[in-house]
Length: 138
Image 1 (spheres, rainbow, N blue to C red):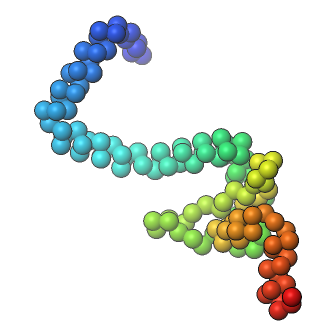
Image 2 (cartoon, rainbow, N blue to C red):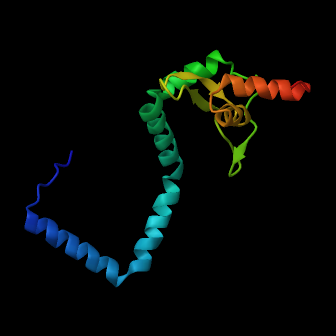
Image 3 (cartoon, rainbow, N blue to C red):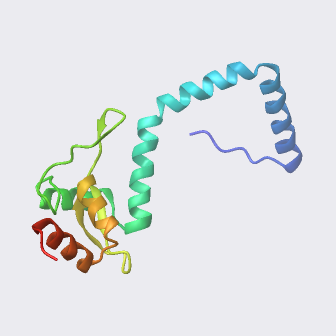
């Protein structure tokens, strides 16, 4: 295993100076490399970002998400249907629904049900009024 070299401040400055000089001499070469690297690692990065956001926002690991998904049989907790919304040709995963006060995860919802709950601002009375409206009552 290669040991990490410890550089002095002057060595770090020199290394940065040389890197900037190489880039300035042939910027298109480095831009092309960066584009290729971005595409090559895109899927891995998206997965990592999603896992990290679940962990940070909801204290939900990928394993816990999969357990919750299995518990719900892979369908939305409200309508009982699987997700149908796609993003860039790929089916998106069920959204994590959580209480905005306690931040406790309640379940996994499809995009439509998640929007419905989100637009009602988690207010049960608003949802009841919506039901009365749909039934034609006042």
